[in-house]
Image (cartoon, rainbow, N blue to C red; front, side):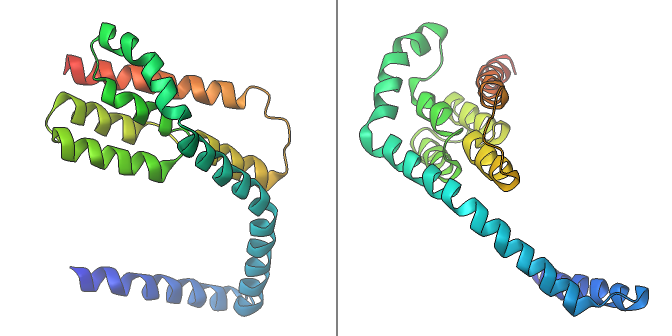
Length: 171
């Protein structure tokens, strides 16, 4: 099975090149133009991504995440959810890799079949790394004003947290 997957990419690339030749497209020049545009887009996105990485590092290193989680802990206990899920809910919109690592640590600590593990699984797979997506998509287009994008996206993330908890508790 792994051999089929390894052969798929060269076959797909070969099919694209063959299709280009059949259609009379200068495949190599088109490739070079696309590579040039890709590098230009990367150069435009770089400052935004560096800023995002710095912000994520500051949030992690400053203890802000722990402070917010400790403030929200009583509310989580009243609602009946594991307070250990709170850092995941707060980290997911900021850092996908950080959220993945935290989800894995929750799985190792509580087990994938525990309520905490199930909530973490649903939450990790149903939310987006909001700030990364906004930085990449808006940065690629050069937009400076986000207007309602970030508040709407964060409302979507909050809704996903509530629905992840409700889904696990009800099902």
